[in-house]
Amino acid sequence: MFGKSPSPLLIVALSISAAIAVWGIVDPRGLGSLAASAVAIQFDSRGWFIMLEASGLLFVALYLAFSRFGKVRLGPEDTEPEFSTPAWIAMLFAAGMGVGLLFYGTAEPLTHFDELRKFSPDPQAAGHALFVTYLNWGFHAWAIYGMVGLIIAYFAFRRQRTLLLSAPLADALGEARWIRAMAWLFDLLSIIAIAVGLAGSLAMGVFQVQAGLAGLLGAEDPGTLTLPVFAAMCVAFVIPLRRDLGEGMARLSNTAMLIAIGLMVYLLIMGPTSYLMNGIVSGFGRYLFGVLPAGFSTAEFFDQEVVNWFQGWTLNYMIWWLAWSPFVGIFIARISRGRTIREFLAGVIIAPTLFSILWFGVFGGLGFFDALRQEGALSVVNRENLDATTFALLQNFPLDGLTRAATILAAFLFVVTSVVSAGFTLAVIGTGGDENPSPGIRTIWGAILGALGLAMVLVGDISVVRSIIALSAIAFVFIVPVLVICLLRSLRREAIK
Amino acid sequence: MSSQLIDTILNITVFVYIAFLIWLATRPAP
Image (cartoon, rainbow over all chains, first blue to last red; front, side):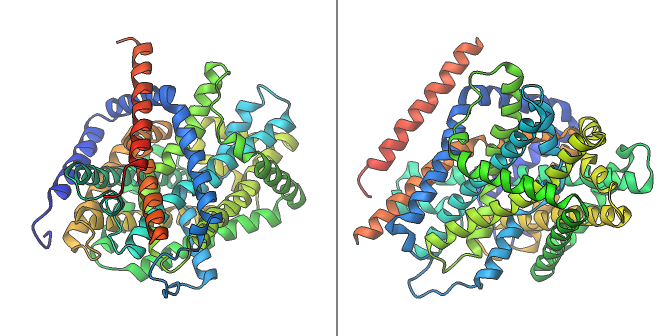
């Protein structure tokens, strides 16, 4: 079933992931409350370090892009990029897309708006709410993904190592026993972060699809749809994971992306276009000139309510991006062979951030329009059930049956293609970098992702799901800086030669 | 253990970690 005898890494990783899944299924509340309290302690004590690191990664990315290292190619000097620049940018957009944008497009800016209007007049609160959303989804997020992706790509293609997170350690620091032990631990922790992070994504997809379906079918209690939706998603990802359907998966992912972009354009045109464009342009300007200092903010002098809001969103997002960084990093590394470091960082950090600015500008702007110019019905829905906000928004526009069905389909496809891709990545890492892991091992990872997803669904509360993801990724706060040092050491050594 | 003590310990581990990073960055090449 494993193809060859399983490595200790694989056995330990499978055992820990399965144990978390069983715990979550047997006692979802216990797992949830432990995660929430452990994460709260970490955020209270180490929040400053997490923000410092997120900003530090952005500054290191800027330094690398503008320094002489920017010319270093990710591969031998004569390597040509595998994909044309427009195709590559489109794939980076796809990496940045996902069920999170569908889920939070309106919900997040409106939630921030609700919180901030307690402290400032509505127009300022709306502007700041959009700014905070941009901060959470913008340059810092993509600097985290970009730096991890760059490290993976540099060591895999330039230094001819594997795509694993352990590769930089051996190359830059040597093969001493303690370094090998640390490298092993890095691979193990990256597997757990990917598995738990993607299970969280799966749960988020289930919540989103069930809320949409409940609206379309007129079901009174969306909870009755949870298990059928979850089962449908599991069937949909296990089949392609067993058979090798790489091309088909890419097509489905592109379909989801086109639906999402179509939805955004439709809402921009059918909605109050100039109102939305005004919001996007002023929000972009405010973000561009305020992003660097805001990246260091820690909500230090505010009362506990504001601190909780800051920790629950901005700090949680930074950990969230770290949780997904090995998964997204491996994906963007694989499509970027042959690019220079400058091209890589410019593409990875700028293109998806611009997309997020447009997306939240449109979806958030429509939420503000409803709150400030209409009756504010969306804010009421948002306060009661975050999962239903996107669908409530679509109901305000013509052809809402079609757009809601399309959103459900896109959410479904985003989740299924992500889980298939994650199952594959986990199998690659678990087998020590085997680029073609056996169908058996891929299926086992699919089953574990399904079980972890079920645990998250049973937890039932998206904020607790976010805490579980954060807990699984706390270690990455300490792994990523070590990897950055490996990269800088290897680059310097290469320059001296 | 009081929350103040936990906070202090967690922060000291971060300071130790930062020292480890500096050592890692400056040690001679293998």
